[in-house]
Length: 338
Image 1 (cartoon, rainbow, N blue to C red):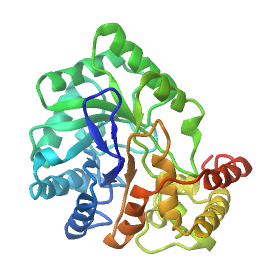
Image 2 (cartoon, helix red, strand yellow):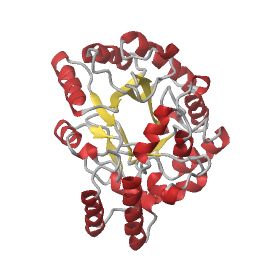
Image 3 (cartoon, helix red, strand yellow):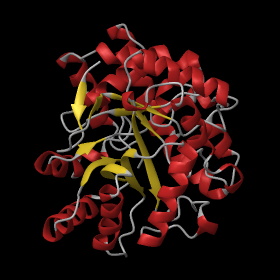
Image 4 (cartoon, rainbow, N blue to C red):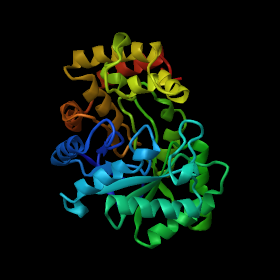
């Protein structure tokens, strides 16, 4: 498995990162341990979680994922694991983070309470990569970065990152860090997949020029690229099956991922993968981690049976002919997720 540096930091990670956002909801602890062990045994050393996991965020099980990850880490040498977590910022209408009575934020008060809660649940004294989970563009980046600097100075955090950020927000944060001598965001964790290539429009250039690494999540477009929603299917236990039957906000999110354009693109990507002799899951994961601005692609699973196709991407570099066919689909069906 290849390894890449996170931004300009001293941390180098496997180019596949194991995501955990379904642990404690769709996947119970025993299943989660089996998935995590498979990733670890395959050479994955990078693991991502968050204070609001599992998803969809709900107050009654908020933080359960970090507790599961913390118990699993006790079965491995701590130094062998690069651990990432996040402090919840405002959800901007997509979610209402069920932390601190719904009053999430990126000021010092919230950051300090969030880190102490995560360290306790994870049962560790430091987090390798600590990320802001949704930005707050109406708040001062300087104050957020100064609070995060305290965590770095105290040895509770090694490196900083952001998530779900815009090109303006990332650039503004980098400028503030440079202007005030503060630690900067070395990574950005945004949605990026065959069905959602908007990151390439602007943010990819920022990452290349400023040496910030993308850690893309949802390389399978929320599972849509696996084909499990094809032909109107609503598989039991699947995330968007649950969302399509949920509250209005969840239905809107599911409809963004599961729609006529995304399903048409998925069918064409499946055909390309089949012709290449691999699963579309393997192809989509390999495609994601093959970009020069990507350090590590976050993958997810709810069953151990899903892992082999994911991990098969570790040793695959897609040929130019396959990449050309993928680009053709992206030109024909622009922005399937809107």
